[in-house]
Amino acid sequence: MTIETGVLERYSEGAESLQADLCCPVDYDQNLLKLLPKEIIDKDYGCGDPSRYVEKNDIVLDLGSGSGKICYMAAQLVGDQGKVIGVDMNDDMLSLSRKYQSEMASKLGSDRVEFIKGQIQDLALDLAAMDEHLQANPIQNSEDIIALRAWQENQRHKNPLIKDNSVDLVISNCVLNLVHDSDKDQLIKEIFRVTKPGGRVAISDIVSDEQVPEHLKQDQQLWSGCISGALQEHDFLQTFIDAGFVAVKYDKWENQPWQVVENIEFRSVTITAIKPQDTSCMDKGHAVIYRGPYSKIFDDEGHVYYRGQRMAVCERSFKLLTEGSYGNDFIGIIPAQETTPTPWLDDPEGVIRLASETKGGEFKDSNTNSCC
Image (cartoon, rainbow, N blue to C red):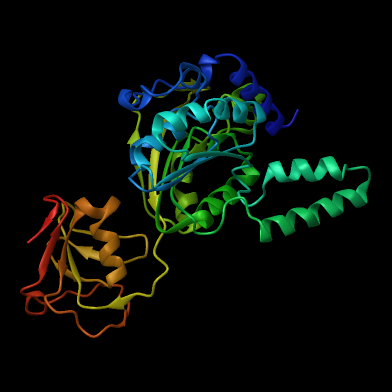
């Protein structure tokens, strides 16, 4: 039995009857659960609550949406102008989540949730379309396999399941660890591909404090139970950094491990990250002040910020550092009069803006949620 087959079978069982050992205790927002059918709640298997990162009007993509619980919670937060897309490869779970779609649309006031069939490591390939194709073109020989691969590539290119740069927020709840190790890098690259520039990621998953040995990875029960497929805690963050995300951090970390196997601790975490804007770095006179407490820090693009100094930044970096994940660490200074835009020239030592250059500027302070 392959890893994928084991995962499919176990979660098909989870769609049929409650599998208590597939989930960690999570403190979900009870107000968001009130509208949800009991079956959706009971047959959800997760280790965190990425719905708390959803904002109004977001287009949200939930990877491995399962029973649909997180999707229906997120739908209450995005509002009428938002949308939630759940992706899952398991037909039984898709049937369960879709079972209450009309009921939830009525409760929400609009049909803003969609469930589609796909593998989260290949978000361009529409598995429902492939099922239809295979019914009409069954595999009978090796030439048919080659033809299928050509069809798949054409589908990915012309009719991608999830388009490039189309999602404001990608979320997932204890699913990335279920993907085969050989596909994990591709999975993160796919998340990067579909996220809009400036978009966000909030992933709840299981990590290990040590590398998981091969004999545990071969244990189907441990893998499908969200244990032996876990990434090591540093490697988990690094895969997102390597894919191009910035502001990558552990936003939530459970002190107590969920399980300990052969003295390896497996715990629930939630990471957040941002996809950088694809605009050019232009210097218009902006500056930021790093609050401390460290004497200096570096961002993921190698820029240095000295505590208490007015550091020159391009407009793109200014927006990134004064909003979202970085917002509480920096005070932003918007110039009283923008200078003529010039291409940003990086300096490994950083550039300090003189007070004379920033005097009279507008301070952007996220701690007070105001400018003055």
